[in-house]
Image (cartoon, rainbow, N blue to C red; front, side):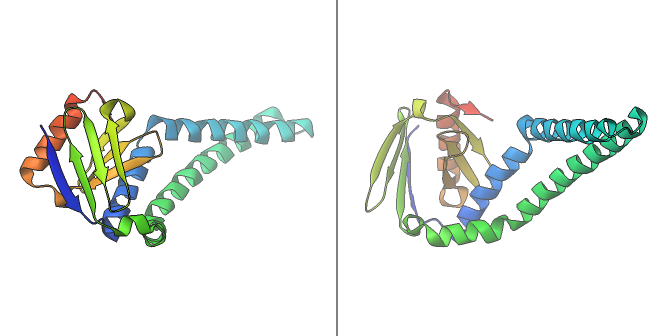
Length: 176
């Protein structure tokens, strides 16, 4: 259960990894919980203000409910627009981050991972990772909720792909 690949990330690899991470966030319960909390807070404010100025309670509650539904839908629409903008934003970030334009060597075994470039080497035990995710185009291996390392699946042979998946599954790192 050890493997090694050398690759140079492409712009498309980076865009795919950022998109996969964003879709994970959109599918999370925390995303919808936040939208509901914001909608509730907005509805409360929208209900309290008219009541304070003498509007009937029923009318204020109807307006508040309508406003919260519109606000929740607007939040979802904004999230979907952001999803469509990922290639532009991530592509620009890829161009800015010169370290992604160099060859990388990624190795894994039962103990953890090893990354090597012409300028740096990093060894991480599996216990340093927070979670991992397997996507259509890449593996994301998270150091925390926001920071991840990615391995494009295009660089993995079928054997390497299965071996990396097995190593990740055996690592006791959360798979979400």
